[in-house]
Image (tube, rainbow, N blue to C red; front, side):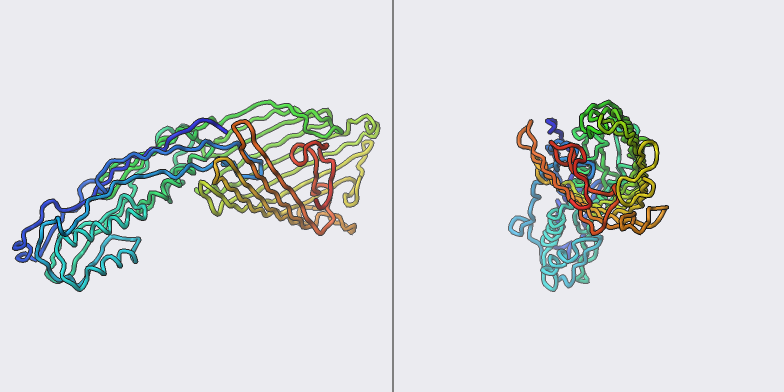
Length: 495
């Protein structure tokens, strides 16, 4: 795990409104009216200046391809400590004559209607004093704070009390502007759209913190370089959210060497890759890779672009691989094969938080494969026609990821594949063709035992009632499935 930490910082200005000077009893009765000035400037409750500092747990290592990219452990809940506001107590406030209140109307509130109604009910159809109305305003303000609407509050506007109806005005805090600092290539709309839902009125602290944490988990940004400040705006209850970010390096390239291929085509594989995580400024990702062994040439290219603020992503990819058997005992037969795969899909997270994610995806794969013996098309199994297999597959998958623990990641994937009689898929009377149904299940548990020791547990299974073409069979053996066994040592319909 990474050892760096960072802090998420807010400056929250809060102000509570109350009377400093109460009118005399004679003026109250004579005029039949009381007035409390509307909060000037930014009225955020209560009147203290606080800074929220939050330690963020560094990102965990990236999980396998079938899991979402954002797989770090979640940041801890920030501890916002808001000093309690002064209580308006009857035994300390100046005593004023009481008057009859028939009804209390609360104006401007869009949330907590039922809770506010319970508070106001205790003040209706009875004699109350002016300081009791101030206490009611305070109780409504505290109610908002308890539900994390920390920039909202209530006050008494100027009004006539002679008719027995009291009006209490609620100012619900809102974000009037989002200021972004530090963006270079990434478009501002990417960040604004992800904060928009979290900054709708009334401003809720928990909702905003969660949106900021999700930005911290985004690989486009450096985790320890995201700061947020809430500063006064231009009017009552209005604020400016100032977010400072630093983009992660988007370009990456390199060369790798690994002995992870089958010895029949040459186990030592060399790969050269290049990619960009923000190619056009939309958070779109481009990756290309070329790999080769003694008997293999493999090209892989992909492009993915987010299309909505909830990380719904369109993805297209193309894979082209040509291989020939190089083992000495088979070399004289000149066995060759070629595989082509084009895929297009869409993935949409349905539930998404800093701790967990559940997503659905739908993809269409066009896969083609052909094998040759002594330079002539040849079928090595039942189903292919002249060595050629063609499948058109619709795949529906469900992904689940849990990162609620700082030292553990749990991930699971379920995928249903439907072989379609479309786009020239292989169809014959052998019972083994491109028309099929299969289910693939995958589960992974990653446990950090110490800074240098990590335990990885992985389970894979495939079930199908049909006889499958080799393109869709389940393979076992190799670094990605069962280590210690040859790559693709066992290939079967079910496994």
